[in-house]
Image (cartoon, rainbow, N blue to C red; front, top):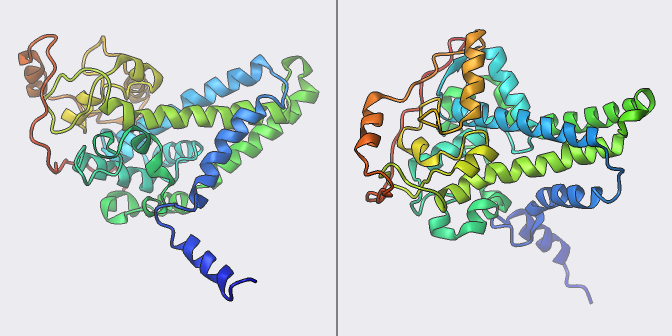
Length: 326
């Protein structure tokens, strides 16, 4: 016998499920992984599809590292309002919610890095939580606009933040259309709407996910510490290569508003190299340098010796200035 009002109470419990006990909020992320894994066995392989996946990986990682992270979160350089929107839109195709949400959570992370108030610190809630678990909870899905007032004044950024599903859906549809066209017009490429969607969208997006998530998790666990920051941030060449420069995380936590995160020429930072090139043609400007005092601090560190973390606590950081187009 069915208990009166049970469906209503169950629905209410699901809607109030801030900690995602019912796993409802895991569905989109789980579907992306399932579609990437199962799809590989359902569509024909084509080198061209794999090449598109690689290109979209690089383009979207750059949009996240240069746009969502260094520009929106830290204001590490300046640009026009048009290019600002382009960075936000392309970053949005990575299906990591909107630019305001992303920047707000990242600013919160820097303010409380590796303290109990840090949402995704592996030091407090473990590696899985910092890598993926926190993203499955509805309580962290809201955009804290009070942390990004400099960004929230742009209606186009608020639009992308609210309709964050639009850019990835547009990419998915475009890839399907391109694949269907190529199947007829360029049959030698081996492309179809199906394999271009599976490789170019689902597989590439999942790889971008985990490259990004590694910065929240692994860069606070593996690597070396040059600076005695009040957190467990570390530098890793491997993670820097995977994420186009984000692996120099200890450098970044020591001076977050610098455009470059690889502080030396041998610390490979592809995102910074591309931003330098874009500055030559005037698309970006005022790239914020690493101050001489930071390099002096690095020189004084004993070679080969890891720095011990200072007493942890909230750290208030400058956010940078608004773009000239504001």
